Image 1 (tube, one colour):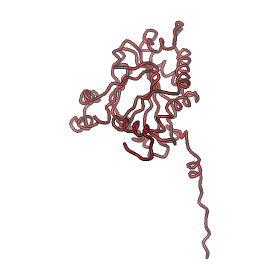
Image 2 (cartoon, rainbow, N blue to C red):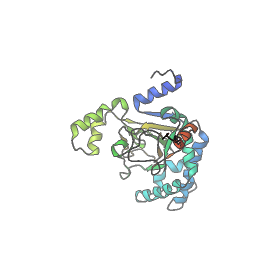
Image 3 (spheres, rainbow, N blue to C red):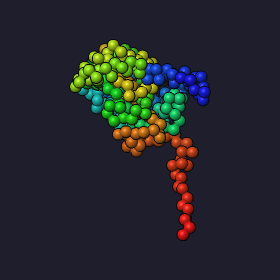
Image 4 (cartoon, one colour):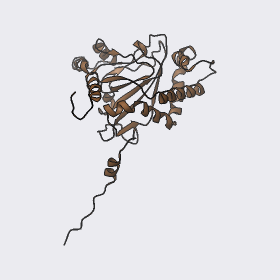
Length: 271
């Protein structure tokens, strides 16, 4: 992508994003990354259904399946989410770790999802699957991006998959030929074109949520912990998820604030 008004670095990043529809990005703000990880760890210990042995944070995240049965997993996750929802510091830290890449991919006047999401996928668990989907299929605006943050190293089936932008013809062909197919049938149509993403702790993924993505049964020996949150340009079109009930403007600039509040003067006409 050549644009006289953008730096060479911005042009390179944008070209990569437009080609694939996603970027794996190294987080430069390590302090806020540690804040997030440590805070989730503290919340998890308080929400855990029984006493935990004295183990390091990362050992717990990677080996949660050794301490928690599948039937207790979702109630545990929901309790953590309730605590996350009341912690404004976490949302701020989440924005800050992604700000540099959001500025380039989305812009600097943003709306942010009100609630951070958390996923925990233990090995062999078929109850935590996210079938192939694009968020735009269920009411999300095509102007949104997802910032996906792993709290552990993610790879192969311990990670998520995505159909890259340059392979999007695969899902178009699947819809054209599949009729009333199930999500599993759609997955089989595109399976040879998807990419399973390798993302280490210390990196984040930003992706176009209009591209098909999901996860499969975790066949690795470790548990996955990951978070996600949606961002969009505050003045770009919304669909079913609106400002106030799903999004919150977070970085409005003075010119926009002035424009929003501007009232044109009334001119009395001569009679």
